[in-house]
Image (cartoon, rainbow, N blue to C red; front, side, top):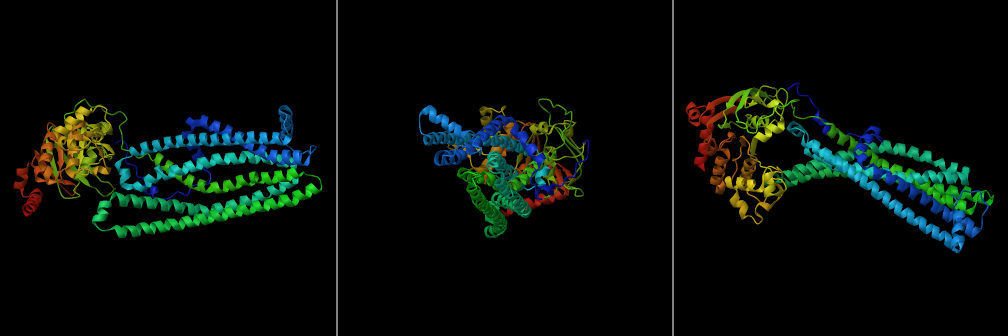
Length: 622
């Protein structure tokens, strides 16, 4: 490797980010995913302007046209009417209808424009937001798929799931809220212009209440910011706890931990409820305060507006117009305060999302990787391999051995000896220094990890089943593997029999983690998957450690066929598997302490002999 492995603080994924009220840089980054849908955003903006203008004009029709012009007969007032009195007269003359009917017709048309424009504004805005966040979620998923195993060794899966699900949803709520604010503030400014034209004094009196709302919002923000952070933290803790318990449900039930786990989840749930209550109390108090300001504003309009009507400085329609416009004046401020809750959550969620998206930890890839031939021989060489997952805690210590092309090497040793670590390094799941592992005399660090993994087939004890059919789980989306090839692979490793007996055969849908298959059937399916991929090197990591006796012979026969003409490394403790190996390597505390054939190691009377005797004794006892 060209540089040392970076030390990273993975605890950042456990720490909660409080977020800022308005992070312009973060919003700019979000816009990158919305940019492809800018046409919808522009259309949404035009539509909201149309709907907002229609909303203002409808109020003028009620107050200035219906009340002042039609009912009172006031035609000389200097109060603005946006030309609606003249429009009413024109419709009245052109259609030969009464002024009242003309006003009603105009109101109906404006109502239709308002409803349709508002509907399509919300639809186009939501379509753009949903599409952009879909792309963001997909990019985040793709990014997380390429993080190395070392990342997931240190970061809880529940925290990652929260970023992909809850945090993306919080961004949706925020962006949709921003769109609704646009729809509120456009009529706010239009109404403000009309109100100044009607009465400067009364408008200024009402505007004096706006700073009060601003001060209240400021204190609300300070009080609620920490509460919302705690709410998000408690939700993440609940998700993590739920994921851990459900993924290990069999262990929970076998150990009788249901009540204990329920107590732990209940504690976290109560903590979440306490924080949610605090959030609700703050939001409710803030909403009630704003409602009170609206009532105060209405009182001021009646008091001062009524006085101006008496003094003939304002019409009755003008007073009614102020009462109708008051909601347009205060609703955006109230809505802004309510959206701050969403904004607090979304800013923190956005920071979490981009924290994960910016996390550049990955397995080192060579700048100019060596290209492997179509088929490699499969010769492996380990030279003075030293490795530890944590600094100062070595797992493998100066491990050196060779595996000839086509040779079958068994690796045995006590738990924690480093057997599985060897396989993870061979598959390039972790970084290690150059010059330690070679494939056909080529340093694997000089190969792209993807190329290495296509040449090495790994069968694990915990065989992972994906959602889909049996055929899907053999092919794994590889276009080079045809249905016929998949079936032939299954037939070769003795999996075809049980697959054909299933109701849907190879098209049988598997339950989560293959729950409708036995352990032995899943193992045979694993063999079929690897054989279909046709790797030159085969690794079996305790692959036959827990199988039912009914399929024992099928497993062993399938394993023998799978290993034919391949280099194989067998990590196992079963005698049947070890005895198929050409050579046995014994690991203890991360060091190679014995190497030889089965017979040679038994004669050596060392650790292998001890392990063999212990297992032989277990077999006798059974």
